[in-house]
Length: 387
Image (tube, rainbow, N blue to C red; front, side, top):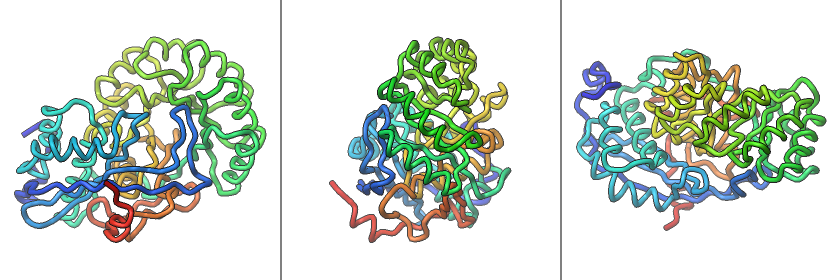
């Protein structure tokens, strides 16, 4: 039995093993007003992979690989090939309740592929919850915060007029933290942030996210130019992997730094801690290879006084539910201090769920149904399936 597996769960769930894994590529457009522009380019359509894991007792669980090639290097059809040809054969027959062993099996046959691995792990948590008739957050130890989560809103790297209009609309919708995408063109980045601050007034929290699009000197200069905008936090100002450079940006600007692309796994988190280069770490199950691994990072960061928050790849309902269960059950997911983004389904034109995640302005409410709490609408899925 691997570290991180709880033998008590086996007594509750019985011996339930993976019998079959199905992968379904799905394409859903974003709503026109929510299409994203960032240092990574445009995101107009989401091509994600749904994963159905069937156990030998007939129960099934669902997961979601929220892949974006310019972010993690994974594509929808690539994730499908990886799961069908490599990961699924490695986990067939595995005990659904032994998540650490499941992770070990997948890590033994493929490096990286975070979102593909997460989708299988996510489905196994869903299966466990359905078998026990309990929500996943209870399997994780129980809720340590309310089931309703307040999010920030990520405003794209839009032109000045659109940025001003959207910022005004977001304040009217009740958002108290707005994140502005930068890292595209330094002069336009600074102008955009200044326009948003002018529009939203002094009371709303303002953050920026460069998605690694600035070099060190540009990041320092732009952050200093934005001093009067009173930024709450600066997310991933420079490319991932340069922990010394990130520490320099933090030290020379005095800005609070949120590491996102810099932290995919536990070793990345250890490097961030060792270099003292961030104030908080952005986690989410997809990026970190699953709920268990994300919690492991959150626990490590917490022991070193570093907060964690939730990031987003504009997930659908399954991915969003997994994020919400992680937040609700993990003390160091400090979304009250550093709001994240669990609004992904609201960006899309249709939902994959018969019971969509409840999103009302900045508030996302996690349901109490078994497993992840999401019932897949197979008709919608088949209508948007592609090959």
